[in-house]
Image (cartoon, rainbow, N blue to C red; front, side):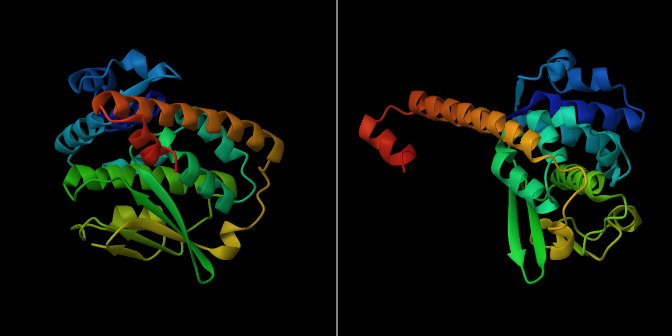
Amino acid sequence: MTQESFLATSGLIVMRLVELHGIDPQGFMQQVGIDPALLRDTKGRVPSQITDKVFAKATGLIPDPAFALRAAACWHPSNLGSLGYAWLSSGTLRTGLKRLERFGRILGKVAYRCVDEAEALRFIFDHHRDDAPSAHAIADFGMSIIVDMCRKNFGAELNPQAVHLRRPLPMNPEPWQDFYRCPIQFGADEDSFVLPRRMAEMPLASANHEIAATFDAILTGQLAALIDTDVLSRCKGAPVAATDVWRTFGT
């Protein structure tokens, strides 16, 4: 059976996040079964099932339902590996978001998708989980980081055109309104944000196509290795004929 996993260094964002809320980050990680030292291993990976334990515990310990939005103040490009640096060198927000769509599997068990709309680009964050409070915290965590990534490249003045959240309307929606600075639809069918096309396609001053191409080559190799590992684990977990393996993975 395939073992889903996430990039270990991204766990450093969680450590900073819980520390912001007065929780000992080393002890927190040990309690959920993660060796804090592993999170500094640039090639390390952690089983994705631990993500649910992390956010379930954090949601239980932190009384603020909007606590995960503060992840935007906790990330660093190095926490996202080569993808973080490739993002910084992207020519436009569209190319950056498409890069995340293509290589996001390296980060963990989340699907990213770009959808073109009339004069806009919609970016969907799908964590493949139910609507438990911890799942909404995972969405806040991921969405806030990605919007802040856009602001780092475009400028702090960037505001999405609209945001859709699966989270039900909270008793106090102000933290989300203050962060996204745009109309928000709570109780939506998806977690996503919309950027005007002119904003998504505006050339960025931080663009460096040569550096982006270098990191893309690295990411392509990392993604291929991850897929190969998944294929191998599936083959070990289910004895099937070689022709069946080719039919499944060779198309």
